Length: 207
Image 1 (cartoon, rainbow, N blue to C red):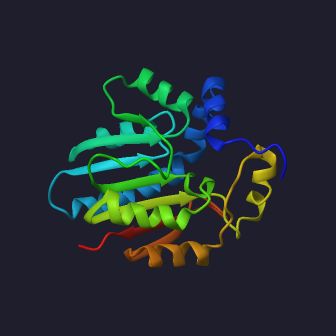
Image 2 (cartoon, one colour):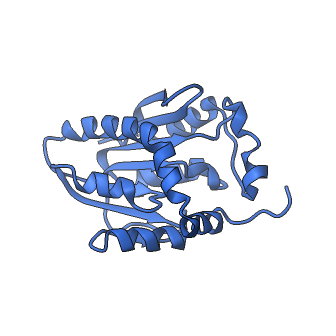
């Protein structure tokens, strides 16, 4: 594929053009399912929880998390400067980081990590999952990840060419294998919001 741009540059442009709002609307149903799952699991902790949205865009999920009664801290990270600038403009008291994965590491650990439409832009999503498990999550914490670009979603297979960015194409079985190899337990997966839908995979960091 020629003329490949960094995904963060593309999404920074989209923030400038206002296309982030369309992304929010398009992902709302799947993210709603992901958050419902994650919040049910954090409720089992019996205490307040800390959360992070990886690839937070304009911060809409961070703001939802921060509004939850038992959320003591919510933050987001994104590599697109335009997205983070918009998040900070909308929510100046919020916690947003402009940083590139996999190089950035948060200061603390989290009980809930959510990520929608991010990991396949990395060249090694499996390594990022292992980093989440080893360095980002508290023991017993949950990661909930959604991806729309995967091998079984045939309409997504030409997205790298259409968007002009790198995407790592993995099958559902390969994604599941990556979670197992990363050391997650109690792994669950489902298709959210339609057919073929968003592939959602969730797993718990061992206690």
